Image 1: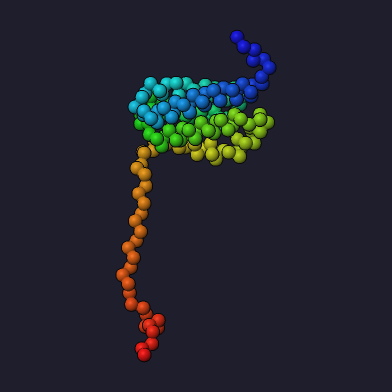
Image 2 (image 1 turned 90 degrees about the horizontal axis):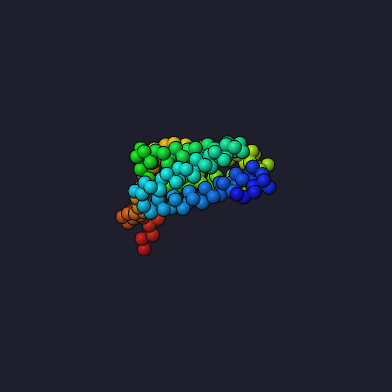
Length: 162
């Protein structure tokens, strides 16, 4: 058993988030390659759940909320209530990045950072609460408008007859 007595609760929170976010990143990228692999969902759900619990212990409410919405998304996927799409995986990766950024902060900066980034947390949780976005095909370039037929110059611009 290791001695963790020399670490603050915030340092332990940071280590927990870094560990579970690494697992989330790896798992989400694997899921993107094989979205039909439902065996990948349970470990992702557990990682989000662990982050949520660690954030709750240290009182980092923004992380609790984002991790909770990530966990709920994995539950819906696991229950077959939504499909795994690249767009949804991108949203989950955004949540993952948010969690890593908040965990990397010095403890004293977390409250002000959370206030400053409340809109971002809200965007992430709102997106994760909405139905999974479909994977749209890449946008097709808009063809250039057809050049207008050459119209004769207005009378004022015509050269004077010789």
